[in-house]
Length: 136
Image (tube, rainbow, N blue to C red; front, side, top):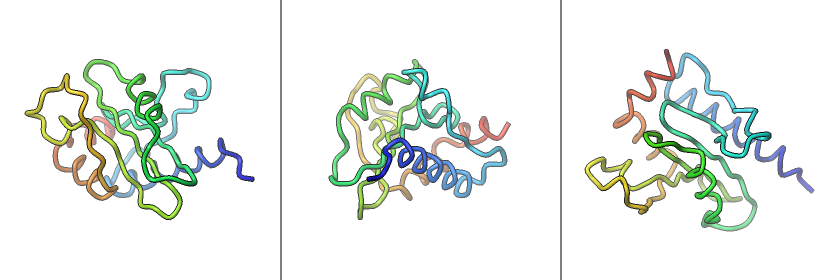
């Protein structure tokens, strides 16, 4: 039996390492260790992005509470992202639809799920300021 806390921490480290490499971050992205003690902290923060990472065995759709958890961690100008992976499935990322198209209504609760490479492309293309703010 796998310890779910260790499995979750390993996935958070994996995502941090992927982002460090793919976004060429000079200051490495690291897990927020206080998240285990404080309820409303995400697993990772990149600029305004609050990232919640979930690794689960069986399934193909994230649990609604996972999305609510990342929503609870954000404040007014911050952006939520739920990064999730099920066994034998690719890494996916749920984001608000307005983050893909900034002209959409920010008060709308619609979301979309992206493949990992598409999320990285989104960050590199539309959210350079978040990469720069993390580097400084």
